[in-house]
Length: 620
Image 1 (cartoon, rainbow, N blue to C red):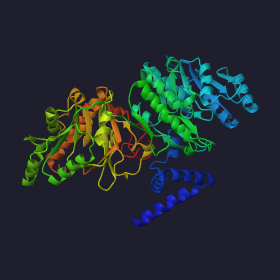
Image 2: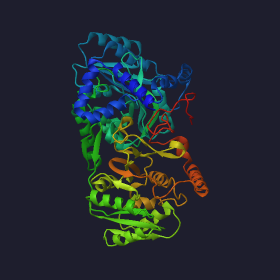
Image 3: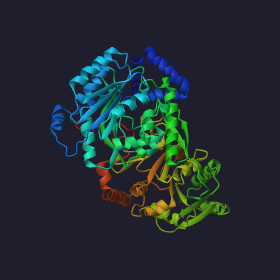
Image 4: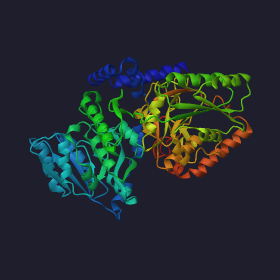
């Protein structure tokens, strides 16, 4: 084992040394200054961790072959809208400009127009290339501005040229995949309510010899968009929605697209997502894609974009930067003074329960709550003695469950007795880490669109136990980032930012009691497993969000009081629960978790690529 670790260490250092240059050293020093030694080392390790499925070969196998592209060219859509592609061009290197235009000329969907606003009127070579292409293809239209107006106003000039029913945004040095517009029209043809749509993307080197860092996105995710402009590229919007939302605003330069996207989705009936890599973001040294430390003004603009969005939709929230550039935290203040009922089932385990209750008292700065402990067939004298002590506490109520263990039934029983407008399901084997945890969870849960809130759970060895659940992971559902060191932030910082998910664990989950009742409570046929996933899916089905909040953290000794799944009866029961989930949630299991991505693994918990057929992992 030590030899293997030594080899891995040599490989990692080898990869680091390969990438050293004056530029990367300078960039590294900026990161070191920003994060400090400990956080810098964690992020350095994450950056150079080997890919479980290397993206380069994966992308080569993934990209559509010429036969597929030819079939797309020959396809006739019943609905074939004109799509305008708006490009603000400024001091664009000639080779980049030609390749960007070439990516439009290679599109398998033909009904498009390219609207280029040239913000470099003095650049003769740019003007020559643009004039040449405009003369060759009537779909290419160019306006030369009198001067550079800045990214926002240059983009507005391009948008003002657009005649299409939909308008897409393309940076002057980036590329569209040849099937990009075909896939967009295909999606629009299937759902006429889509007013805005976005795709997945990756990055490509300046000379186009390497694709890397794929960004595989979930379907529309409000809280993720408030945490980071994950939509970014490629984004297209209905022309009428764009006009209603308004164009780009120069006061948000640096995050002008984040601000624009917010206003577009706020005015859209539906935001569509195409889980295909259809946009290639070229990186070079002057780009924020490769040197984020150089553009702090952009992150300030992003923070203001989130604040402006919250103000427009009437949601109170305080926005702050996270340690990771371009990612934001929104803290939602508690409205009013509602009561929270904390429901804790317990069997024996005096010390475990004692630790849990002590941490609640020490870490809670919100006073309007009650604790309901549901006694479940304990046998030890010490726990009943402890119950006598607890009965003197006016915040604690003790209930007795006399039937056999059934997690769902026990918690349903607790909710029926709860006085609070909000219920917090809590395992007895947790210990609260975060001061102010109840206020944080309540602030999120009070939002009108939210039904449930879950948190980050950490094992005693400081590795992650739960950072949200993905349906389909491991067969039915599984936790994300399990066993990853808790100091790491994971793929695109997803372990450490607020986002919507299909499910969270009920080891610590807050819900509006009204939403709980509307969903029908926990399904009592699911006595032990998947009951929280099932409940969250019912909450989602009712039109409410389930939010993962990593800013609340608890230690968790998973299933300590329940015992092992080792008897014949328990194995049979578990199989029955699997069958229940398969039969009741077949659609999401078949089509995939909307808050995940079909190109990501269902056997790995860390957002690894799902190998394509023949690459080693079973595919759907």
